[in-house]
Amino acid sequence: MEIPARAAEQGSQDDGEKKLAWWQLSLIGVGCIIGTGYFVGSGIGVRMTGPSIIIAFLLAALGTYIVFDALGKMAAKDPQKGAFRSYAKKAYGRWAGFSSGWVYWFSEMLISGSQLTALSLLTRFWFPDIPLWVFSAIYAVLGIFVIMIGTKGFERAQNIFAVIKIAAIFMFIILAISVLFGYFGGNLKDLKIPTNKDDFLPKGLHGIWSALIFGFYAFGGIEIMGILATRLKKKEDVRKSGSVMIVMLATIYFISLALATGLAAIDKFTANESPFVIALEKYNINFFPHVFTGGIIIAGFSTMAASLFAVTSMLVTLSEDGDAPKIFSKKGKLKVPPLALTLTIGGLLTSVVLALVMPDSVYEYITTAAGLMLLYNWFFILVSFPRIIKATGFDHFKRFTGMVLILLAISGTLFQKSSRPGFFVSLLFVVFIIAVLIIMNLVKKRKESKGYNPQGAL
Image 1 (cartoon, rainbow, N blue to C red):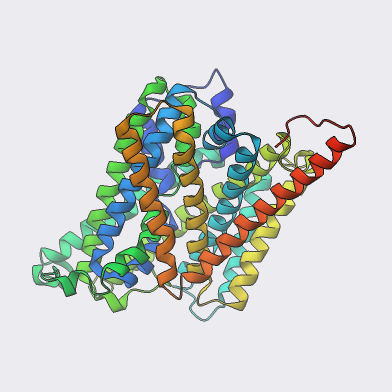
Image 2: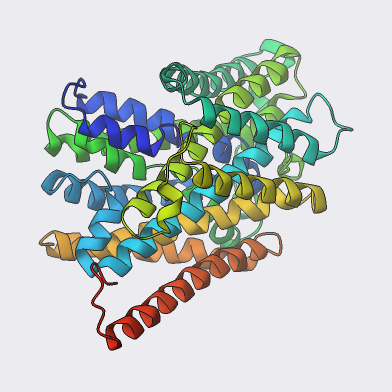
């Protein structure tokens, strides 16, 4: 996610702020969603399923479209600064808003950790002998520093970082096509097009099933579109904006992944290096790995910093709404409430420790868990939809199709030994949230039995 949630919410409340055209929101969405999950995480998916990764990404694009279509319809009817969390609360009550908000907080915290680890892995391109946790610690400190400064200049710079991400992908596509036309020591024969099932599906259908989570993860960030929908000139354009955005992303992803998997053997791809760098490493393009990796690091850091803004802001919002201890929204001398910032720092420190104790597997574990937590919230959006909008038969068909795709992505993580820990980590977070809900209800009932009637009961 590229735009801090708090900044987006404040912007939506500022009547003097310039409204967005639908195409502007589409471009912002493209910049918001493209991140290290695609630049690095897609390599894990390629390793799991081979060239058929493009099928996993197209299925994920379909699922993303269905979720956003539901979110867009709700946003067009009733724009809310809290977007999906507000709709869950309206549909099922305060317990649903509480759960959705905290699932989102944990998912964004995990995404921050995933991005932190990805940045560290990319930096080892130049310094392979330095432990991963050293870079993780450096980027964590820089990320916290950005939160504490909170300058408007940094927020404006996010647009520049978004352009860098898109430019990096187009640079790869242009160079890959140039290779096929005989430049940099390549030729058209270098592109290996699968001609049979074994080439296209080397790991079978369960390979696509396993990789589906990484396709969905590459589209993570559509939630911010629901929040920014309040800034559109015409609120009914939110669905058009989202549709164009998803088509743009799916096209970019399809072309770049088809070229990457066609130019390099599948066993070359790893979780420690961008698949796009691997695809061109055998050609005489000495500048590309350095420029491309540097561009990803710059853009990836902006994504990580924005996610840190988002988790800190979400915690403050939960606190203000009574869904987290009030102490987390208590302001001090800093630009953000100190205890909310402290909890964010604690989450980052956990990521650094994980990078220290299991440097070879931490990225895949955290990425899988982060993607799953994101999908839990997407599932909640689809469940909430018919309670907010009068759904047609086709709406229900799409909704159930989206639910099936999400459940396939979730269950697919159980096929891979490397993804399975992330699945159980995500379940632990959900169980923890449910346990907190149960405890809160027990406390409420005990107070009620003593004659105290609290406001805003779950």
